[in-house]
Amino acid sequence: MVITVLNLDKCIRDFGKLENLDLYPIIKPATQLVQRTARRLAPVDTTNLRKSIHMEAKKKGKDSYGRIFTNVEYAPYQEFGYSRKVKAGDRIMVYGRWVTAKKGFSIVYRGKPYMRPALSRHRAEIQRAVRSYVKNYINNGGK
Image 1 (cartoon, helix red, strand yellow):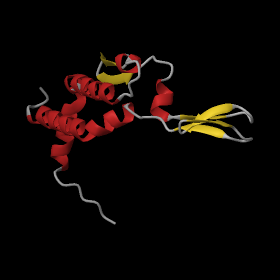
Image 2 (cartoon, rainbow, N blue to C red):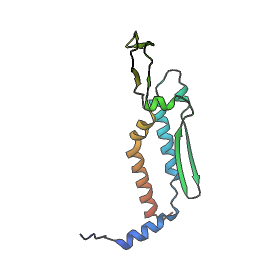
Image 3 (cartoon, rainbow, N blue to C red):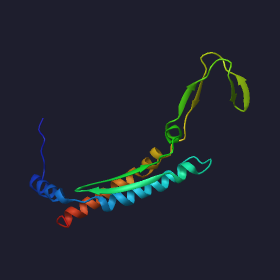
Image 4 (cartoon, rainbow, N blue to C red):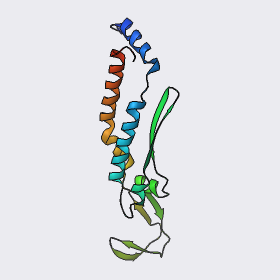
């Protein structure tokens, strides 16, 4: 098998220009966009979860990153769901009716994801923005 790389000299020259690339101007608005969407998608009972979704965009040397987070204790259960075993004889509500649990019965809560869908919804848009930003950076001679 033979692999041919066309315009190798140009590729090497262009990648050299990426050495000082600063993605912070793209990272911050992308992080804000995902945060707004996560807040909109978050399940609401008391609005506590929605209000607790924060974002942080930072630049450390040449590296930039963005993160969206919450400090609400029950946030992972809302995002990923959970299950728990119920003791035989416990009274639980199932479809609006109280029933007595049998041995080996589990309650499963599927969760209502909001963080992962927020990122998924904007993934392609963010990738296009980064691609365009890098392309413009290379075309402007690394400036």
